[in-house]
Length: 289
Image (cartoon, rainbow, N blue to C red):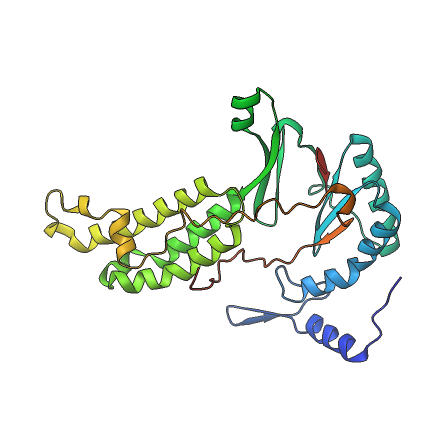
C-alpha cells in the first residue's frame, strides 16, 4: 500500500484536520474526521482511495468499470453475477483500508430496458428507448441518458429564489438579472452536455416567473389591465437574462470501444454543480456503488 511520506504534505493535512469549523462566527473543534463538505475531504478521499483504484486496475478490471469521485463511486458491469463479485471484492479491498460500504447508500440496480436509474454527481442517469430507431426499424434500442437530478433542480431554484426576494422589486431589473446570470450560467454549463433540454426549459420558466413576480409587485395598484402580457421571456432576455434552453452541447460519438476503455475513471467535478457561477461566454446493464 502506498504511503504519503512528504512531511510538508502531512503537516498541511494535519493542520486542516485540527483547524475546526467556523459557522455563523462560532468555532467548533472536531474530535475526529472532517466537516461535511469540507474542502480537505476530496483530497483525503483521493489519497486514501488511490489504493482502491490501483487494486481494481490490476486485479478486477475484467469484472466492470469503476468510476469514482472522492468517496462516491459506481461500478458498471454486464451481469448480475459480476455485480455480486464486484461488491465482494470492494469489501475485501475496504477491509485493508478499515472501511465499510455505507449500507443505505450502496445499491444494485438493473439499468436494462430503462427499468431503473440512479443519481451520481448531481445527474440522474437512466436508459431511454430510441424513438427514431423504433419508428424506422421497429427495434427497441436503449441509450443511457443523463439530466439534472431532482436535488440539483431544487438547489438551483432555491438559489434563484434567494436572489429574487420580494424586496428586490425596488431594484433595477438589470441589477437583479446580473446577480442571477452567473448562477444559472454556471449551473447550465455543468449539465450542458447531457439530455437536459426539458430541465433547462423548466428552470428558464421558473426564473421568468420569479422576475415577472417582481415586476407585478413593483407596479402594485398602478398595474394596468393587460400590462403584464408584454413581460414575456423574450422581454427579460432583451434585458440580458441568460437563456438555458438551446445551450445543450452534444460531444458527439466520443465513446471508446469496450476493449479500449480504462478500468478506472477518476471524475473531475465540483460539489456546487456550477452554482458558484460560470464563464460569461458561453457497463451496460447494472451498477453498484
